[in-house]
Every structure is written in structure tokens, then in C-alpha cells.
Length: 549
Length: 85
Image 1 (cartoon, rainbow over the protein chains, first blue to last red):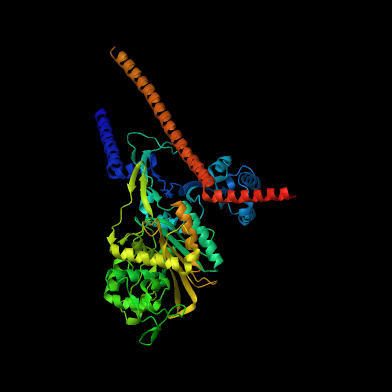
Image 2 (image 1 turned 90 degrees about the vertical axis):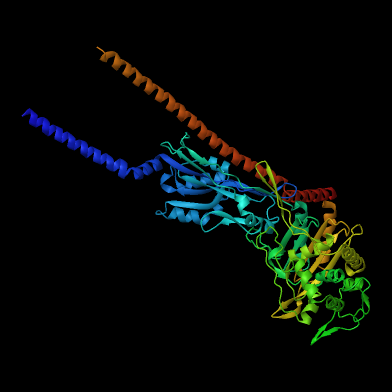
């Protein structure tokens, strides 16, 4: 009997053992990995460490773009200890105008008992948030850009905004061009957490360090930029223009000193990401003439003794007549007088001496048929036509029928300022990453014009400034080599006198210049001419720059 | 007979283990609390630093200087008017 019982017991025990073992096998071996993962996800947490976006500085190390941490307020009705009115009064005490800003939203929230949650479009500082730590009020931390100089250099800086994935990325200007450098590297911490969700740091923690974005140090001169924007806005108002752009470059390095585009309806907020100085194509007009003369001198198609013997009559090409902007004729003009009088007839004869092959060769070498490669996002590529009938070549001599961006034109003209050497424009001087300084790579330099050509063209430009109509604006202490231009705007394939682009481009002083500057005024209504609209702005700025640089 | 000291020793070992565990875990908890607090302080200091940088740059910006210059002109104008009166 006992033997029987012990047999049953041992069978039962064996059975139980097998049952437990098989269950353990199921949980530990079969379901093991899944359960281990579940356990780890409960005990461990993965935390993202968002890096700080790099700041952007002007050439005097003053921040043009900073980061600020702000908080967005939400209210959850069920958690409120007091009434909603009391909570809103408390918010108003710490954030004046809160009721005014959110009038409609507050009313709707009060009158709708089904609405439990609301998020307001008001942003609170850290101090304000600390004063409002009461049940029912929730704050979401948000990192935003802050602009100490408000809208200064907005076209150069660009903006940041959320993309479709909800990540903040740069749009336009430096923010977009240097997105990779500015954003930094996101860090991660994989560590066990306690019951309250706090991280417990132990040997089993794993982390990948976050790296803050690089700070960008630009060549933008804050004072120059300030004056550029001030005088440009005044100029647009004074000449009743639609818009205008100014860009200033350091001749030797190509560093951009200031760049601004404004319109008569300029917005008071940073919203646009388009920078007309690099995005808008225009026909340069007469400011292109010194480039053509330089090409002709450099190829020895003409020399400095050139005299336009055919300037006593309009140049007839097929069915077209080329005449001067003032319909005057300047017989037997010297090279200096062709530039001084901005003589279209003389220029059309010079370009025929130069020839299409040489013209296109220099046009390409001066980078006028391609992007300059400036370190700003949104640069437009100028187009260059493939067919060049004689009339098109003739009109190209005075900058009509070709299109470039303002930065293209400045780069080409700066070649004259920089002794025939082409330098590419750039905005960023260097980056910093912690204590490390990283220089922005230097652009390649190409010699385009010979020293003799530069000497000759500088002398012509100086003569034109000192003896032309613009001499009235030139301060006596300033030596300037420059040229004005007025390009007609083509509407429906026809040039019209009613709309023009008035420009002035030049550098100062003529020998070893401190800056090269271009001023473009779109559709000025008080006077269409570059010499009476863009030139006064140029000279007023030049006298300021003379003291600043 | 041998069982008694053995169990006593085992009991003492268990007590030691428990005491050590309590001490060690409380040490870990306090260290972690300290780290968490320091992280919060660091975060708060970063935000304070941002605020100060923002205030400083606002006060020294060309915009602000321009505003101050305009205000000063206005004060001068008022003083001139007072003198005339």
C-alpha cells in the first residue's frame, strides 16, 4: 500500500516537475527575448539630448542670432484647483496683455464645458513660468531664435521653421546653407529609471554625447549693415521706388560686408526667405560697360587711344538703330568719354571689335553664366543664350539682353577693384565648436585681367566719376572708380521707358580699395536714372564706409 | 549540535547582507538624486544665461542705441522749448 502511494507520489512529483520545467522553458526560452525586451523597456528609458543650435555673429562678434528657451501655456480644466477665471487672472498678473492676446480663445474655452484642454499662442519666459506653477497649468518648453538687432540682415540670416517631420530646420540664407553645421548632433542616454521616471545612472547606462551646433562668425559689419538698411529704405521712399538692393564686398577676400534688399512694402516680421540680391535676375544696363571695355583692352581689340569715329550717327544693325540714352551724339569720343557719357553707340562699336568669341570667353571666366557659389541658400543661376545675332551682341555692350544676379555683377566688377583677380563672395569667416576655431575654406582666385588693363580701366572710371554728372554727389576726400546704369525693363518682350532698374556700382579708393559696392533701385518714379537715384545713395554710404572700414 | 552555530552564522550573514544592501542602495539613490538635481540646476543656469545674454544684447544693440538717441533728441527739444518759455 505504502509502495503504491509512494509510487503515485513520485509520479505526481515527476509530472509536476515536468510541468513546471516545460512552463519555465516556455517563459524563459521561447518567450524569453520578448519578455526581456518588455522588462527593459519598463526599467530603462531612452532620452534624447537636443543640442543647442549654433549662434550667428557679426564681424564685431556681436550676436545677430541667439537661442532662447520659452514656454507655451496650456490649461487642463479638470486639474484646476480654483476657478478658470481665477487662474486666468493669476496668468494676467504675470503676463500683462494675456487676456487681450487670447480674448476669443478664452471666451470659447469658458463657454464650452466639453472642452477640457486648451493651448494658447502666448509664450512665457522661465521666470514667468516659475511664478505660474499651479495645478492645471502646463508648460511646453520651446527653443526659438532671438534676433537682438531685430530685422537686421534678415535676408542673409534666413529663418528656422519646422519641416513636415516636426524638426526645426533652416530656410534661406545662412540658416539653410549651414544647416548641418548649425544643428549639431543629437545625443542619447539609455539608462534605468526609478519609479518616478528619474534616470538612475549606473554601469549599465549607455550614452552618446550631444554636440552643440557650430557658432558662425560672419564678415557682416553691423554698423555698415545698419546704414545700408537705413539709407536704402530712405532711398526707396525718396525716389518712390518699388524696391532696392545693396551689397558691399571686401575686394581682396570677397567677404560680404553688408547685404540688404528692401521694398516699399517691407514686412515688419521675419517671414520671407528670398534674398533678391542673390535670387533676382536683372539686366545690368550701363554698369556693364566697364566690363566690356576691360575685355576689349585685355584682348588688345582696342587700346587706350581708341576714338569712336562712327559715333556721329546711330549704329544701324539690320532693322535696328542703336542710339544714346539722351539721344545725343558724341562724335570722335575717346574711350574715357564713351564711359563718361555712357555712350551706347561707342560701346556697340567696341564690342564688335571685341567679337563674340572673346566676349563669351571673358563672360564665362568672370562667372557671369553661373552661380557665384556664395554661402547663402537660394542663389539663382543666370541664363546665357546660345544664339548671338549681331544686334544682341551690340545690346550686350550696354548691359541689355543679358541677365545676372546682383551678386554676379558685383563679383565681376570686383575683379577690376581686385587688380584683375576674381574672388568668390562669401559671408562666413570662421566657425567655432567649443574652443576650436575652424576657418571657412578659402575660395580659389583666378587672374582674369592683366595689370595694364586694370590700370587703364581704373583711370577711365576715375575720369568718368570726376567729370560726369555724378561728381556733384562725390565727397571731395573720396577717390572713387564707379559707373552708373539704367536698364529698361522688358514687358511682354518690348523694352519700355516707363519702368527701369537704376544702378550704381564702384569701389573706393581706386588704388587698394576698401570696398566694392552695388546699389540697385527698382522702378524709381521720381527719376528713372541710376545717376540721380542709385548714385546719391552710393556716395552717402561710401562716405560712411570710409570712416567705418 | 553543529546546526545551531551554522544557522546563527547564516542568520548574521543575512542581516549583514540586508544592512549592506540598504546602505548601498540608499547611497545610489542619494547619488542619483544629486546628479538629477545638478542636471536641473545646470539646465536652469543655461536658461538664465540665455536670458542674460538676450537682455545684454538687446540693451547694447544698434536698434536700442538708435532708440535712445531719438529719445535724447526729444528731451533736448523739450528742454529748448522750456527755455523759450
